[in-house]
Length: 182
Image (cartoon, rainbow, N blue to C red; front, side):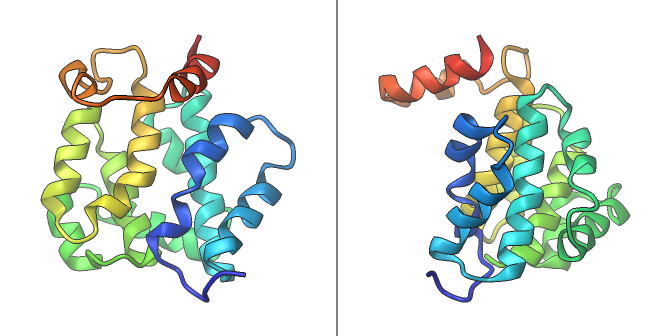
């Protein structure tokens, strides 16, 4: 079992897990099992279940804001993070990050990520805003990037083509993308 820890790496396995198992009836069990390998902590599992719901709804075609709302009611800890984001919806994300925390802990990270998703207008704008928030922007980008990429797939707000051209992707990864969106 993993460490008793509630940091962002708990979510690192969710995008590939959801890409393959987003419609699996045992998804919550799969999420818990995957998270506990590295983060054996009930709160880490709760944050991951809420995050998995966001990704699942993004794959189903929901907007970023709808994805955040879909994660409500999963647990008290994730609800608290989502509520913190909703209460600050009109504030700039960098101020929200400074107020709630820029560190790796999911209690701050999920709230800041939810705020970014609630205010999302495009993949590029939200990713850039996340970077400007400072702190563990890479950790927040695990969930943020997965939700935005699925939500904006095939639209003008999608991952910028010039960004994609700078990355070499394995053919197996492209096959997963085709399974989800074709």
